Image (cartoon, rainbow, N blue to C red; front, side):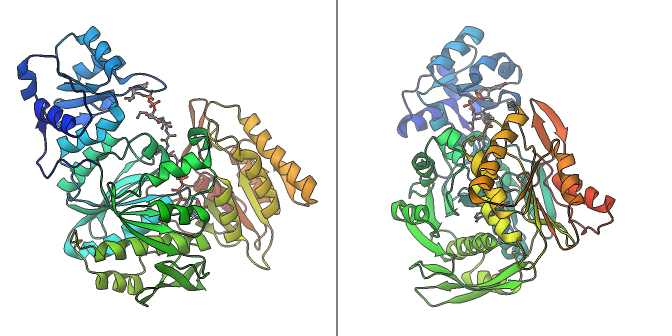
Length: 553
Ligand SMILES: CC(=O)N[C@H]1[C@@H](OP(=O)(O)OP(=O)(O)OC[C@H]2O[C@@H](n3ccc(=O)[nH]c3=O)[C@H](O)[C@@H]2O)O[C@H](CO)[C@@H](O)[C@@H]1O[C@H](C)C(=O)N[C@@H](C)C(=O)N[C@H](CCC(=O)O)C(=O)O
Ligand SMILES: Nc1ncnc2c1ncn2[C@@H]1O[C@H](COP(=O)(O)OP(=O)(O)OP(=O)(O)O)[C@@H](O)[C@H]1O
């Protein structure tokens, strides 16, 4: 991470170019008149459609286009200067001559974050304090838990919290409520993130929880940001379409846990990748074990007991002997892991001597023990729609999450477990047969249907899941009932038709999403609403749902 020191909002082209040279992002060329150096930059944008007057337009090249292809639009919108690579410089000069200053760098994505940080005034100590979470599963849930705990601690002080992730970007407090915008990425582009940090500062946000996807790390979206605390949940198969191998996927995640990027790393060491991550992380590293097995970790979860649909548990600090009893209302042992990670991240932040967080460690312990910060709904994550039958919507869309989610909803001595599952198109294809096999091994009745097919033929995606399922039935001698039903609304109706009051219906994979992308066409469907409708149509009682964000896709 490069820190340019504390500074106010905005800079000029010359100062920015010098800062980029000093930080090793050169060579930098601004081949226009000397006055170009004094051109004022008051913002930045990577998306041409989001350029505002006075902005630095950051033109990256990608699989679909080069940002500089859109220079006419960018000029019309009032861009003051461009940061781009040699190919971009040629395009800008061809279309716009020397009408605006151009800063040339070899790697635009690398320089984009630090450039935006300089313009918007993001430094290692500027507000908000940042809590980043990465891992294959649990990012969204853990960031909601973090936000809830931070809110409990900060609201009395009149400060706000921020949240950035798959479901929403939001700002607010328990007292004032939340201002929300739908999110179209788990982790936005670097330039958008620095703009967001600036807007958070202006709104009085003291701390923010954000999801950090492996795509974001690979595409340099977090460059120029500095995390007070970063947390690691787990690493299991997903996203091999981008990363190729698990080793590359691991290496991408590991970039977050470097001294230059993160002050304190809290690593869940429940699996081998967690141990490897803790061994490779630099800076202050804190480990957390949540399986209940002795693990030589700094913090360990013990005494997990059922509490309603969720769990109570004790966090033990193996060095000091300190014990903190807290709980989560969300079902599944994995939500104990998510809650424990959020708790330890905030406990460690409060212990930091480098930034005063506005709360003490004693405040955090009190909040954990008395304020129930993890008794919140997370949209589409183990969201209970009805109790008889148990009807649950979850976002599990990879092998490990499916195993965890199916394990969590299986009630000992309960009725049958009916599952609706699909897989997204144009994403990791290798996980499809595995997901089909897990489905028939763990549920009693499996309905294979559609997720977001994107540009792929949905029938082919279903066929890959069916092949894995049929193979597992044949080789395992299983008696699982297997059906293929499309569209998804019919699959949901069939699942509810097959359910009695003692049974469980789990809709997996789509969680909070509000529409399917079918070859570019938007098909409105929200699993939670669809499931409630199907249950009510058959005379079952559904639970009142909290009004929350989370109908996006
Ligand atoms: C694989 C990936 O992450 N690709 C991202 C990357 O694409 P890219 O480098 O190929 O760039 P590009 O799309 O050719 O665009 C280049 C430039 O032209 C501009 N452009 C491009 C096309 C156009 O029609 N109009 C336009 O203005 C773009 O704004 C950009 O400035 O940069 C683009 C511009 O920001 C992103 O839109 C694009 O995200 C794609 C759409 C995407 O779907 N990303 C997903 C996979 C992703 O990042 N997901 C993770 C979460 C994953 C998970 O955990 O499930 C996330 O953090 O959201
Ligand atoms: N700690 C965990 N370990 C394993 N599975 C989990 C964990 N937490 C949640 N899950 C499962 O993974 C699903 C996705 O959870 P969540 O949205 O919190 O994770 P995420 O990392 O944000 O996922 P994505 O990157 O796909 O948006 C949940 O619906 C649940 O089935």
